[in-house]
Image (tube, rainbow, N blue to C red; front, top):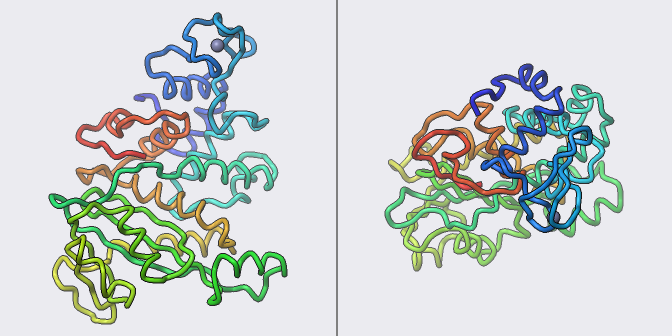
Length: 325
Ligand SMILES: [Zn+2]
């Protein structure tokens, strides 16, 4: 992808051309250059140039590059989708639907919809567990989000309490594989021992080094499967490598995004914002620690969205990086 734009301004100019948008998505969806019918996967077709669609020779169905992706059925043209994606994955503190609406000339409601769909598409769907006996430590930490329910409308308040529990705050647990530089973060129903530890069992390989804080919920159980060490966050010194500073850094970024850009996020939408933040965090650097460019992040995001999974190296052209997304 040598001709990818490098900056937002360049991206906007680049994607003004519908042909360029179609080619960009088509190249990522079908790297061998052969479009597949969205119905029968057929590889023989006619190209209907004026409609920018293909007609399948096998089943007769017409399909566009949007079919089978999150862009399908959307009246919003591809150039606006791609520009919105560029902004979402590259604005460090997130981007609001108001900014997108203004920059792209669409309504705030449309912009909100575009962003929510994009966030859903950015969700990390990798099933590989983090850590491992040969790998570096895994940090586990929780944070609490929200809690300003007094300004909320009554029906929202009920849904809010159903999800957030009595404290009115939403629990988010994060797990960071320090070597792989990969975070997973998820809204949890409560901070019970079983809830917190089950998630670690699901996400972390047996035998990994696991660092948590000294919360009661972590006191027992983890050492049966992991090399478990904990930190006392109130102490000012760090015991060598044993800390959860990486996760705390992630929470700081998350909270800056939520405060600065997204005014009041309701708990039932929080997962989407987590997906967005996780994507940006996990695509800051490759596994060798090299910084990824805006174009790298955009291509990685678009590749995931176009419905194909490839190694990270194939997207970025950088060797040694095989992060899944
Ligand atoms: Zn077909």
